[in-house]
Length: 469
Image (cartoon, rainbow, N blue to C red; front, side, top):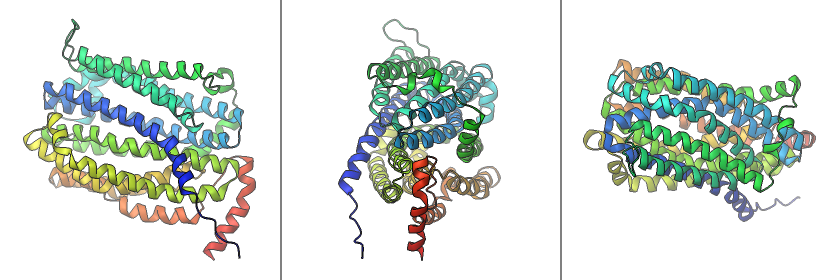
C-alpha cells in the first residue's frame, strides 16, 4: 500500500506569500489612494462623493470588459511559463494586449466625448450628473495607460516578477495623493480645480505607473515586455486557440459587467444619501478585494504553472488548499474592517442617514465576502488550469436568473429598503459555493494547453476516477 505524502504546508505558504503579499500590498496602496481621494473630495459634499463614486462604476464596467482578456492571458502566461515556452508567452501577450487596448480606446472615447450619456445611464439625479460629466471628461484620458499597466502587470505576475508592479503602484499612488492635494483645493499656487483636479491627478498617476513598470523592467533586463516584433507574430490559428480558451472568460466578464451596470442603475436611482454611502463603501471594498487579488494571482501562477509543467497532482492539491487559505484571510480582513468602520466612514464625509446606510452596507458585505471571494478563487483556479467554462456558466446563470430579478424587483417595483436591495446582490453566493466545491474535488477542471500537461492528463484522470470509484 502506497503511503499518502504529507502536503508541504510551509513551502506552499511561502510560495503563496512570495506572490500574494506584494500583489495584496499593491492593491492596498491603490485602495489607500482611493480612500485619500475620497477624504480630499469629501469637503466638496456628499453629492460630489456620490458623483465620483458613480464614475468609478463606469470604470468598473471597463474593468469587466477587459478583465476577460487578462484572465485568459494569465491562463496562457502561467502555463507557458511552467513549460518554459518563451515564444508562447510573447505570442499570447501580444494577442492579450491588443484586445485590451481596443477596450481602452472605446471607453476613453465614451468618457471624453459622451460623458453626459454615461452619467444619464447611471443616475437620474441632475446635480450628480453635472459633477460626473466634469470628472469623466478628464479621467477618460487615463484609461489607455491604466489598461496598458494592467496588461503588463498580469504578464509580470504570471512569470513571478511581482515586485515591479508593486514598486510602480507605490510611485503611482504617491503621485496621485500629492497631485490631489495640490489640485482639488489648490495649494502652492495651483488652481483649485475640484473634481477635475482629482481626475487630472488620476491621469498623471496612470502615466507614472506605466512608465515606472517599463523603466524597472528594462533595468532588470526582463525580456518579454520588449519583444515587440514577437508580440505580433501570431496567425489566425494562434488567435483561434486564444479565443477558444478565453471566450468563456470574456463572455463571463462581459455579461457580468452588463448585469452590474443594471444593478448600479438601480442603486443609482435611490436616495442621494444611499448613493454617497455606496460610493464610500466601494472604496472600502477595495481593501477586501486587495487581499483577494493576491490569492487570485497566487492561484493562477501556482496552479497554472504546475498544470503547464505536467505536475497535475500538485496543481490539484494546491488548488484545494488555496480556497481554505483565501476564506480564512478574507474573514480576518472583514472582522478588522467591521471593528474600525465608524471612524473610517465618518472621515470619508458620511453623517446621519448616509452613515447608517454605510455601516449597514459594510455589515452585509462582510458576511457575504468570505463566500464570494472563495468562489472567485476557485473560478480563477479553474481558469488557470484551462477550464474557463464551469465558473462562467454558474456565475452568469445565477446572476441573470436570481440576482438581477431580485435586485430590480426589490429596488424598482417594491421600493424596498436600500439595505435589502443591496443584500440581494449576494443572494446566490452560498449556492454557487456548494456547486463550485463539488467541481473542485472532481478534478475535471484540469485542462492543460501545453504538450507536457496534456501528456500527464490521462494518468491524472485515471487517478481521479479511482478515487470516485
